Image (cartoon, rainbow, N blue to C red):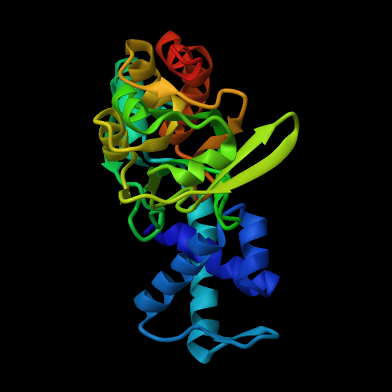
Length: 304
């Protein structure tokens, strides 16, 4: 990690008296502040702070380290920038974490266009449905579909994610179509491990509704459930952007249109606004623009 930034974090912790206050001052996540402090103590080879529930205090090694950090920051502040490259020009590697369905249906094309626009950049796209630890796994940006944001991280809204209840014509021919929301409890519902595992939520005429669901197939990857639904395994709650092409082709049928499944947000999640790299800022701006204007995405999210 950057030792200059780590030194500034350590000085700010001691001056503000807590990790939380330092995070607010530096506009960093608490996880990032904790990580920088841990790195400082690892470099020093000893504990730098006594931590109690009420206050922080410096150890003898911490007193010595604080003096050195202040000296380092003073020297660094007097040095001209050695990098001749334009610091505002996007360049270098950006590591992005994203779920498979969104990566396949939106991010792959978006990233391709971004790399054309900014030829000095490179993207490492990590496909994962779990909420990765940005700091520990060195992820610059996580694209997540959620309504449960981590307060320790910074989130920028990118778009909305509508969902649809759907099943194949073969399943409906064999089992009938649900007429009311409560009928879903009587059907084989395919559930997603990370969202709506046993309870699907809806909105109708401004009223929030929920129905318990269960079935013989669950998975931690929504694309697997989409394929199984098309094969006639049961009824699924799917992101509209994934299901729309299959609904348009007749492979799936949208059900209960009078009920609107709970809408989720699509967010760009990152750890710190402080000295945000130009490449990260450019990617966030690009994705906001892309989701708002891309015809292919608009067609998918409009249901065809």
